[in-house]
View (cartoon, rainbow, N blue to C red):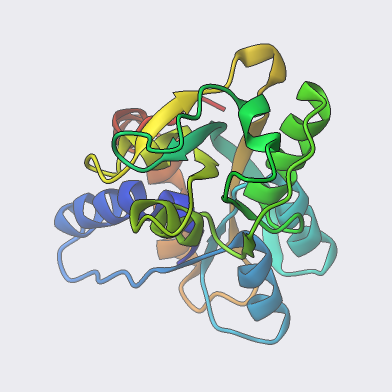
Amino acid sequence: MFAASSLTRAFTTIGQEFEQANPGTRLRFSFGGSADLVAQLEQGAPADVFASADEANMSKAVTGGLVAGEAHEFASNSMAIAVPPGNPAGIGSFADLGDPNVKVVVCAPQVPCGAATVTVEKRTGTSLTPVSEEQAVSDVLGKVASGEADAGIVYVTDIKNANGAVSGIAIPRPDNAVNSYPIAVLSSTGEPTLAQEFQTWVLGPRGRRVLHAAGFSGP
C-alpha cells in the first residue's frame, strides 16, 4: 500500500482493523510524499493500492497507466501553521511568516503540501523565504518539533496527531487551501481482489470513522 505521509496514522489504524477483520491478511504500507511515490511506481516499484494527498499526482498515475479502474476521493485536508510548543518566535498569522528573520520550513512545490502552501501564499499576498523545502510533510513537522525551525506549513491533521510536539495556528478559510485525497487500485497489483476490498473499506463507514477521528474532512 503506497500512501501519502499525512495518512500514516489513519491508514495504520485502518490497516490494523482491516487485518483483524480478515484473519491471515497482512498489509504493508509505504508512506511518503505523493510525488515520490508516483515516481517509484513509474520505476516499477511493486504496490497494490495508491492513496495520494492530491488529485494532481493521482492524475499523473492515471495518465501513466498505473491505475486499474477509477480513482475515488475519500477525504480532504487543509493547511495550518505548526510552531514549536510555546511559539518562541511569536508567530500570530501567515503574514508573520513573510519576515525574513523567521525560519520557515515548507514542502517543496511539486508535492501536495507544497502546492497548497503556494496557494496560501498567493491568497494572502505573502512571500515566504523558507530555510528548507522538504519532500514530505512529515519532514516539515519533524523540523518544527525539533526546534530547527520557527514555523512550518503542514496539514491540520499533522498538528492534531502530533501529540503536543507542536502547536497549531489556524489559517482562515478564505485564504486556506484544501487538498482532496483520492485512492485507486494499481494495474500492477498481484492481489486485485484484496486491493479492491481495502479500497472499499477506506471508502466505507469504517474507514471514514478513522479518518474523521484523525482530523480529515469528507471528500
